[in-house]
Length: 317
Image (tube, rainbow, N blue to C red):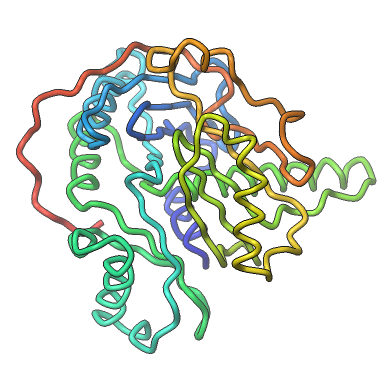
């Protein structure tokens, strides 16, 4: 079971028809939408600007609390599915090691892999990995333990069950897979051939592109790099540079793109407000994916940084 499937399996604890509140936590904005089964409820999407301090997650936690205290959301008390920006959910592919065969050596090994890439701060992170077959690399996700605890505390304080906390990349991959299944069913109904599944995903956030190559629903390679507001012009070159370093990826014909790059109008410079991505703006290799948080959102003004609260103790996810 891949990391994406493992995280998604948590969502199966309740009936698929039950409504959930899907939330994205990121340094610049909070996005949310109500999900009913695999369908996003029309008119439920919101976009809240976050005026954070240096990219710390506390302002976004404050924005989440304000969101959950809105009368309509507080009354519904929907279970939460929380996606974390790539800024706060660090991913790495760990090589196979016999240390992975048992605990606690597996946890120590995965923590060491994150620390090698992200420094000693990673040793205080909560870590989860997929259960790739023997001898294969494993996708590992590390998240600040105090952030995880803060999310659980806010959810409990506001009376919401927290069903899923996952990296944004996992949310984008599940949305892509749902879209593929819908396309397959439509093609079967119409007696046509379904489109070939995408072999990679490019997730675009403000200032960042994360690319993941896929095989058998698993991430087999991952690459992240800075990006500007003109990322549409940079995407092809970013892909080409990656395939030069990893020639085995050059045969991938289709790359799905999830665009979450546009900041709320309250935080965007005036020229940026006129920029929006349309499918025709992408080169032929790249195909625009549906937005996991809805295409049209009600925009709310910035939530200012509140005084820092005392840090919660480190806990496991």
